[in-house]
Image 1 (tube, one colour):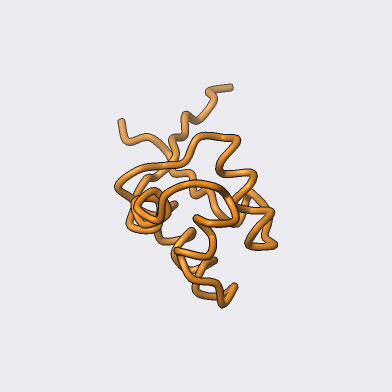
Image 2 (tube, helix red, strand yellow):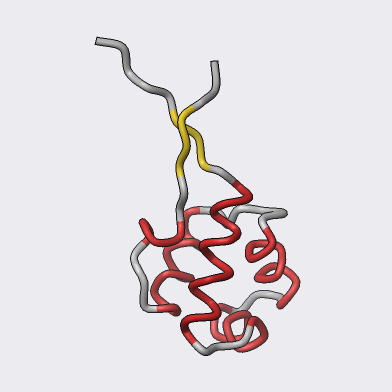
Amino acid sequence: MVKEHKYISRTETGLAIYNAIQNSGYTQVYIATVMGISPCSVSRWATGRHIPDLDSLAELADVLGVSLDTLIVRRKKKK
């Protein structure tokens, strides 16, 4: 049995974060304030330029009231 290798898609994860923020009704500035980070960090996550570290991702999910699975998009690695 060959195990499929997957990776986290930065672009699609950014889109999932962006959509979760939009659905929450919160602004990126509000989320940054609650999390104690800069609004630029939230913007980078929402545009897919960066993926938050695991602790930040878990906190973001809590703030937005969604599961981690909602925010992380994984894809099969291309051979």
